[in-house]
Amino acid sequence: METVADCIFCKIVAGEIPADIVATSTGAIAFRDINPKAPVHCLVIPTEHYENVAELAAADPEVLAELVGLAEGVAMMAADTPGGESFRLIFNNGAEAGQAVFHVHGHVLAGEKLGWNPA
Ligand code: DGP
Image (tube, rainbow, N blue to C red; front, side, top):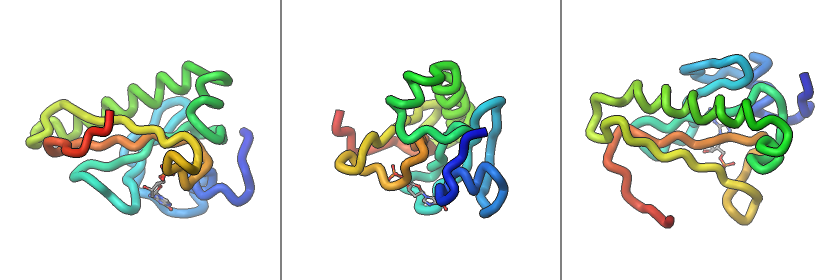
């Protein structure tokens, strides 16, 4: 499996640093964000290292679809909250868009009626 030695998310995949993993699939995992912005705030990541969502989509669209499926599963865990079955899935792509960790990750936000909607 391709990894990047100093990538914090590769270390989470490898079990070298702890994370609250809530779901897994063949090529992806979901774990709670260390700095949650909603009652449910998880990250969905591929187990293999890709820098951003565009790179992942070009290289392995099936794993990108896995990330979406995991995101839906994570959101369903909060289905009995005010947010119901709704969720937001955000990929920051590039530093100027807010990406700080360069192992592609989708932010899954759920568990409340979500505010701020720039789109
Ligand atoms: P972004 O700005 O889109 O690259 O989001 C990076 C997210 O990763 C940010 O919300 C905080 C989270 N994060 C960074 N380091 C760790 C970590 O070691 N563990 C966990 N669970 N989350 C982390």
